[in-house]
Image 1 (tube, rainbow, N blue to C red):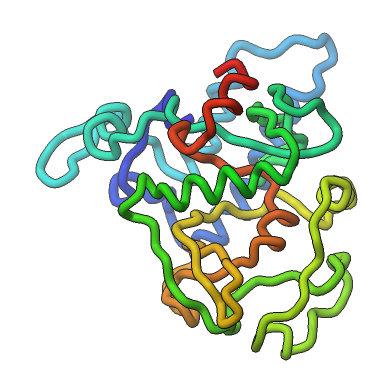
Image 2 (spheres, rainbow, N blue to C red; image 1 turned 180 degrees about the vertical axis):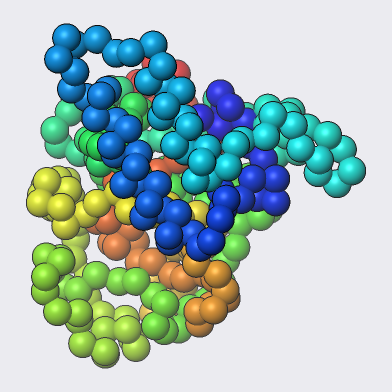
Length: 272
């Protein structure tokens, strides 16, 4: 979507046409679901020629019309121009990997997750290969960092460190006791079957995107991922948190990485 439509700063399009964000999300979602009904089920199996206008009209009424041009730092841009000249990231430079046991490794496949604002959708991802290779790709990318920007820090466990209990628990289980967050504890060895079972049972869902920015070592020398979150800087680590490698292995549905961080052998297997 970024490659197709471009981007713009939040100041140019807030998505807040009135009142509070929660009210807009609730009301727009309810109306949008009704607007989709003619699309999903019609008596003659045909769509009216104006259904798309009606659907977009609902979104524009609640979120505001998307500007075709806007001003940023004294210059006028289109969304595509802003992406090309300000953001300067090329969508084609990035690839997403998944790893499950329900499709052949190293093939393009569909990650069957429900869209956060719509019905179940299939997202085309690049098939990943055995899950143990995921950690190797992440480590390769973070260590190279494109080298210079990779953080390496030291960690003493705190409340915003996310480890796994000795055995993965279903969502209904109680949290591990507080000692688990005060000092390093044993964590499980993650297998492909464990990952797939958690995904199939909705123990792992496609909830939230984060950015892995570096690697930290705890007091035992064990490496953790430094993760940038999007919930503001009010937590213990000013917007960052630490995830253990088993946690990332177990709970990740997919990850995106620049192609420069993918080994050549993997790219060849994927035909890329």
